[in-house]
Image (cartoon, rainbow, N blue to C red):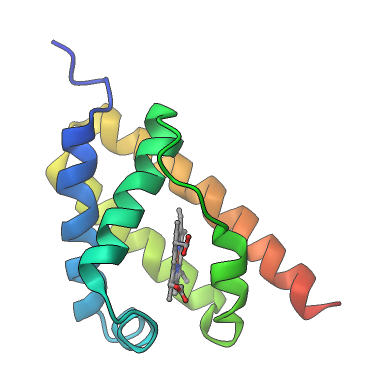
Length: 124
Ligand code: HEM
């Protein structure tokens, strides 16, 4: 069994379903729908991002901190908590336990660093 190994297929299942749920969420839906016009483009970019993070594919070239600081006013503690809850639920439902845990762990660390960056920007 190789269900502990993260694959491109895991990412291709997780990312679209996660954002489908985010868009239906009362807190996060309006934030994303207000900021993103081209959903297929966003989903492709986020799959590249997760491929770079989990599989070191190097496909994503962007600046997540800049993207989130741009929407700083909507990036509340509650929004981050909600994001991580939906991420945990979606990964748990779609992936093996070990793979889901790896995605959850990584997302929590990135969320932490985004929040620190946003706080730094607010305190400047
Ligand atoms: C982009 C919202 C958390 C990864 C975006 C964009 C929005 C957004 C609105 C589009 C920005 C734009 O193009 O103007 C949020 C909200 C979050 C959150 C509301 C939680 C409160 C996260 C987390 C991660 C993440 C935890 C990673 C684990 C990304 C990436 C992009 C992005 C990679 C693309 C940046 C680029 O354009 O290169 N996010 N996000 N986000 N988000 Fe988030």
